[in-house]
Amino acid sequence: MSAAAILLDKIRSGHYDGAFARLYGEEQVADQRARYAEAVEGFTATYGETEDTLYLFSAPGRTEIGGNHTDHNHGRVLAGSVNLDVIAVVRPTADTIRVKSKGYDMDTVELSSLQPVVEEQNHSASLIRGTAARFDGLGYGIGGFDAYTTSNVLKGSGLSSSAAFEVLVGVILNHLYNGGKVSAVEIAQIAQYAENAYFGKPCGLMDQMASSVGNIITIDFEDTDNPIIEPLDFDFASTGYALCIVDVGGNHADLTDEYAAVPGEMKAVAASLGVSFLRQTNMAALLQNMAALRAEHGDRAVLRAYHFLQENERVVQQVAALRAGDFESFKRLIIASGNSSFEYLQNVYAACDVEEQSMSLALALAQMVLDGCGAWRVHGGGFGGTTQNFVPLDKLDVFKSTIEQVFGEGSCHVLNIRPCGGVSIDALAAE
Image (tube, rainbow, N blue to C red; front, side, top):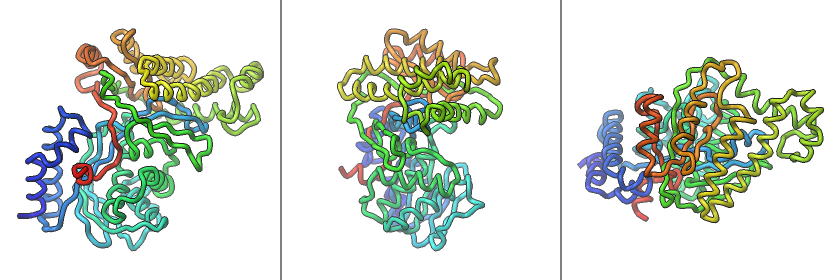
C-alpha cells in the first residue's frame, strides 16, 4: 500500500477527527476529512506515488481584534488566529524544497543557495528561501521537502494569507528537521524576516505572530526589536458568539496614498511633539499643543493622533476584559474602537472617492441588527475591504441574510477563533 493510500485511510477512518474538531469545530470534521483527502490526492497527482511517509500540517489566518493602525507607531495590538488555514501534505526529501499550491505554479528552492534572489521578490519562492535561510542562520536544521498546499484563507480580506503561508513553511521545517523545538514565537520572527528581507515587504510582526502562536494574543511594539507577546487563554467558543468577517467588495482605484497618509500624518504630529512615534507621547501633550498642531498639520492628522492614543489604551482594556471573562465590556470596547476608526482615524472610506462607501453601509447594517447585543468595527487597514462583527448565535441567520442581501451570497464569512496556531496535524492527533 502506498504512503498516500495509508494516509487517506487514516483520514477517512477518523484518525485525525480529534485534531480536526479542535482546529475547526465538531461541525466541520466531515468537511475537513474531505478537504485533507483532496489535498493528499493533489499531492499524488503532482509528485506521483511514494513509499515515503507523508505528513500533514496547518497554519491559520488571523484577525485583528484591537489596535487599528497602532502598530506602525509602536503601539499595542490584539489579534487572534481563525479557523481558516493553509494546509499541506508533505514528504521529506534531500536538498530541494518544492511547493505546489493549488491553482499556482510550483515553487522550487535549492537549499545550496540561500541568498536572496531579486527575481523572486514578491513571489512565494522568496518566502520559502528566506525562511530556510533564517533557520540555517540561527543554527537550526534544514532539509528538503515536497509539499502540496491548499488554502481557504480569504485573499484581500485582512486575514493575512501570506503570513499563514510563511508560518506553514516554518512549521514544516521545525517538525521535519528540528523535532519541534523551535518556539512558535521564533517561527513568527523567522517568517517576518523572510517577508522583510526576501519578499521585499516591510511588514510588522502582528500577522505572523497571531498565525504562529494561535488563539488570542496581545503584542506591545514599544520596542519593535523586542516586542512583548502575551497569549490570552480565552475560550471564545464558550461565549455564544460567532465571528463574522464581511467582505464588502469595494472596488477602489489605487489607494496607496490613502493608506500611507495614516502613518505619515501620525508620525508628522509626533515629530512636532518632539518624538519619533506617537507611542512616545501622551494625550496631555497632544491637547496642550493641539491649536499649533491643527495649524501645522490640519485637523485630520490631529484626529488620527487622538485615535492612536485612545486606541492604544483601549487594547489594554480589551485584554483586561477578556482575562476577567467580561465579554460584555469587551464588546463595548470593540464598538468604541470601530467608532474611533470611523470618526477620528477616518479609514472607513477614502476621501478621494466619497461615492464608494460600502464599508460604511456594512457597518450601518451591522448596527441595525446587532445594536444592544453584538459588536461591529472596521477590520484591518480599512478603505474598503472587510468589517468584523461579533454576532450572537441566535442572531446569526438574520445577520447573514441581511448582509448577503446587499453584498451578495458568500460575502459574510462565519469564523471562529482557533485555539492553536501553526501545527503538525500528526503531532496534534497524538496528544
